Amino acid sequence: MLIARTVAQLRQHLSAYKKPAFVPTMGNLHEGHLSLMRMAKAQGDVSVASIFVNRLQFLPGEDFASYPRTFDNDCEKLRSVGCDVLFAPDEDELYPQAQSFKLLPDPALADILEGQFRPGFFTGVCTVVLKLFHCVFAHSGGVAVFGQKDFQQLLILRRMMTQLAMPVDIITGETTRAPDGLALSSRNGYLSVDERIEAVQLSMVLKSLAASVRVEAGSGRFDVTAAETAAMAGLRDRGWAPDYITLRYQHDLSPVTAVGSQPLVVLGAARLGKTRLIDNLVV
Image (cartoon, rainbow, N blue to C red):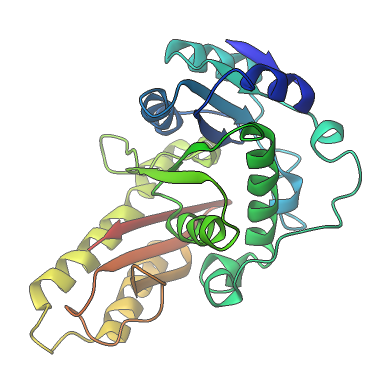
């Protein structure tokens, strides 16, 4: 596996290939990331990962300084799934000047849900992803692989690719889960032993809400607001601090007005102790 530390080194190496397949990460890799890398291996003529903890997508007071950095272990994991190239720049390489040019995503999609509780987050995401794409796909188009766990991010990046006419196809890997159903996340390591046992409740609440939707679809009796409120209250009763548990249309994450009319997704974000977890289930 080649480890490229500079943009020039990465571009020089990738100039020999016609279709890179790319998985951007912030490191501290788990099986979810590795499943995306396996998908990438099947999609292009060279597989590329990046490890870069992007300061722009952390809000003041969030865990940028303490975010787990496990580079040597990450490299071993990437090698185990046959990753060809790892792009691992430092901040001075990717941001040689203060990043004053930033990409502002559509507020109708970026200022709701995660954007409401983490204002500016998607600006940071879109800016770094676009910059990484210009590094990886400098000589050709290609494929980028993202996980479904970050459902809102995925919609925003797809829209960004379309509106900016980028020659990159985004494909989606299903959310990888632990045997008990907890969505894998690099931040799960923050959980205490007891919190880890409790953490599965987020996915269980989403499953329960999704099951209710399926039962009531087409009946005209399903009260979306009441169901969301009850789900939030159930988590609060267990000691969680939920930001949202909500049912939305898949195509634009707008509020649901009629169950059964269009494909839906249940999304949730909640804090357990000091750890903020997100998850979703398509309905």
